[in-house]
Length: 245
Image (cartoon, rainbow, N blue to C red):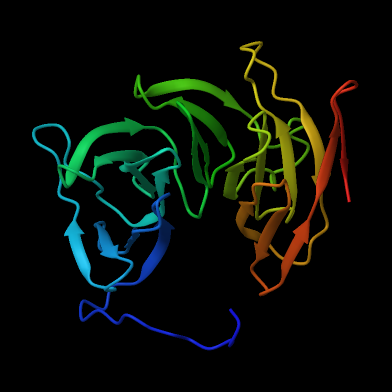
């Protein structure tokens, strides 16, 4: 970052396009996935491929179509997940180098997968069952809620990015195509079944393709036209009001 220069690059001979990447929480390795339906792990120090995640046995064949998201568990570098076009979430154990569980449901077409504790949030590229929360331990759906509560037109949905807020896991950030907007939801941590929209950033010039959130609450979105926006927010703990700036 201090020199603005590329310090290393990796070029594989397979020629398959990569569409997803995530670092392990300890920073020692990173995972990639893409067109060939496989997830590969690289050593951060040597930049060498160290593991190819294999399918599980029996009913755990792995992905059958392109991968669009890979995500390490933020508290456990041995737990890794991936999702894509085949409407499955694959769960891997890095120590075993293979799939250990699978969840059917979300159709991912972007970086719309995140984990916090036992909660998994996904955003799908479709107009039905767009936002979903799953249990990592139970491998099952917990809740489905609409990205566009009003459903006023057919441009709702198409979520391509989704994240839990790190300092406030009771918030979920989601954005995508259609109306090119970002929404911030109040997470259903109390089990009431209500996912209230806290804020909306709309009328962006292009689709939101990626979202990330810092530990102090700042967040960044990357858009299809190459623009990035860095924003902050604050919450009145007494009133529960959200204020973006």
